[in-house]
Length: 161
Image (cartoon, rainbow, N blue to C red; front, side, top):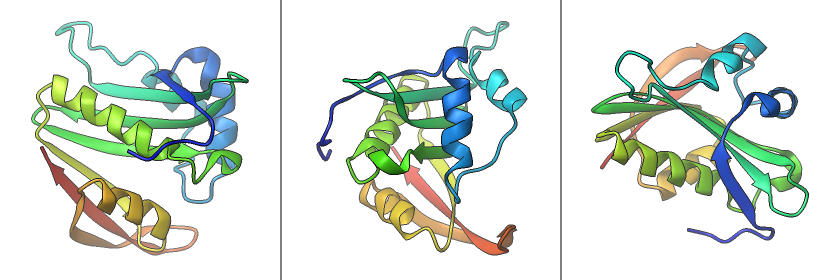
């Protein structure tokens, strides 16, 4: 795990974080542009009937300012999990925050019995693909024309625990 220039605290995403998460995602060209309602549904990740997690949503907060520096969202239906999005504010990038978020999601996946993690990433997003490869993800397939604005292939990656 690489170290950060500034320490961060990773914790569950809360409703109070949503304005910052939406602003952060809106400023990242490769991040999914989900609605506020979608994020509101994420901050209550426990299935009331079974008591198990169906979503994991985390934020990384700058230890000094408390500002949300990044976020990650994943879904799970054990034994599979899907890393849906990871975003780090441009001023906090290249400090290992994305790696810390993905590692923390991985810990939570393992606790829930997930053995296989999937994700999709834009083919042109070399930084993200490099991060995922360094964490052990491998290209599994491609989805032609999956992304729009601009139209681009998705690289489907997989990690087995």
